[in-house]
Length: 110
Length: 119
Image 1 (cartoon, chains in turn purple, yellow):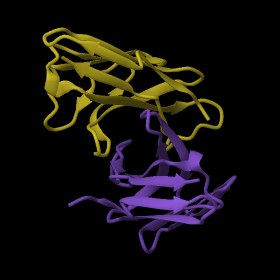
Image 2 (cartoon, rainbow over the protein chains, first blue to last red; image 1 turned 90 degrees about the vertical axis):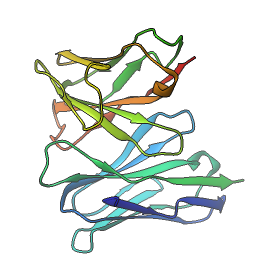
Image 3 (tube, helix red, strand yellow; image 1 turned 60 degrees about the vertical axis):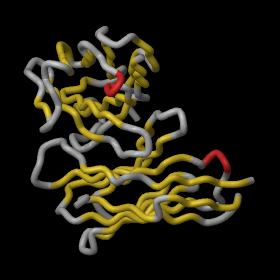
Image 4 (cartoon, rainbow over the protein chains, first blue to last red; image 1 turned 180 degrees about the vertical axis):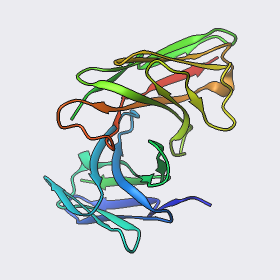
């Protein structure tokens, strides 16, 4: 059983579309991260959330602690947004360890 | 955000040789570093956690004698894959958390990864 579930696994969108990626988790957490991994493999941390909502450019991340659910939204998607998006949670009863989702592979077509 | 670098970014080696991968925090003191492995189409799997100046804590199923981790300073951790075999071919990623300025304890910063191919 995976503590972190992401949906969808794969997503293809037309340039300009609004995109939503979902993350559900089953443990109590102290923080949730959204990560972006480009085809070359490098990982960039997009957001760290413990409550509410954060926005950075065209990216918006929300979290509902009671429902154990987070969403990552991309507005006006662009081909350069094509990447794997990974949800990672830090359980509240462990040290620095993370549980990772299996990722959502996003392809934005021009 | 803080910057974590890895070197090399990719390496190809012969079976039986040892490979060292470096992970550096460039602008903060990394009190804790993490080493992950990622196989194709799979998520990151934590291999070990290292705190500066102490022995690394390995996850179940990870051989500590095969994957040697040294965290000798607050800015450098190394992972050495000893006697590498083709099944060790993977993408190895480090991350670091620490204390500097506005950095919080919960924040982890990821390195760009090292792709290891063992022939």
